[in-house]
Amino acid sequence: MKKILFFIPTVFFSSFLIQCTSKNKITESWSLDGFTKVDSANPIMTPDTNQTFDCPVSGTVVHWEEKNVLNPTALVKDDKVYLIYRAQDSIGTSRLGMAISDDGIHFKKNPTPILFPDNDRLLKYEWKGGIEDPRIVSTEDGKYILTYTSYDGKTARLCFAFSSDLIHWQKMGPVIKDEKYINTWSKSGAIVSKEVDGKIIATKINGRYWMYFGDTDLFLASSEDLIHWEMAENAESKKMISIMHPRMGYHDSRLVEPGPYALLRKEGILLIYNGSNAANFNDTSLPKFSYSAGQALFSATAPYQLINRTNTYFIKPDKEYEKVGEVNEVCFVEGLVHFKNKWFLYYGTADSKIAVAVK
Image 1: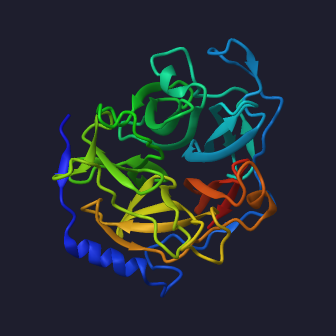
Image 2: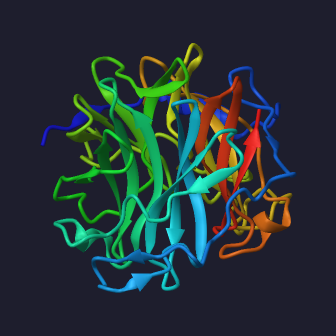
């Protein structure tokens, strides 16, 4: 498979190092700031032991969201917010559920999952860990593309699927199909998109679609058709290029991972991302291993070029349901919609529940 081969200019690394060693400002003019947690309603979603599903793989009835609900994506359709979220059963297998809201805060769940491990060609990637952490955008022809993580219990693989109705999905398999990468840990695909009349639509830059992914460093893939994806590689090493890294001394000192889709704006490509605090050389104001979220800006014409980055988090765990759960000290942002003239940011709390913040 053909690869994208390029070098990152030295000046880019110099600029990046300056950004990583300066804490001059909390916010930037290009960032999407001012989110307020909706304390009166949060958490807006919790596990439900009454939700059952006939699992086609195990051949049993499972309480598919008995253990946790977390890490949702979202979109606006027919003047409603559709939330697609990860749910875990008692043994930890994940499936994707859907809930719908008239106001972006109060949701009604569908009784059964919309995407789940099945007896198909992709079962080897999805069982028993399941299907995790979705991110959704529209396509230019009115369909939907969903990126998600398949987990076989050993390796996470970034996968994707298409739908025209949000209920029936065509699984396309791993994004990275190259044999040398197929067993490489990969997840969290954020496709570069633009907002058109409230819809978030995958958009081309220089004739290609672009996707940020990864959960240690950030990497980049591109495609001409949203189906066949190519990794951005270093021309000499023939390895994937890391385009954004953890920063010693900051909230993202342990890892960086995409949040929702990447939004193309006049200032550049805005990527809201999740950062984890390391055990040492970290942000000492946060607990080690805590998850908080920052923002980064990439070039609108060269998506691999990091232009700027906020010096700290804009949301962090400070509520009991964010600090204590399946994994403590977690605000993991993954869903973002522009709805009724406000931005709604949906996030997983302590890997156990779902909350919302509004701007």
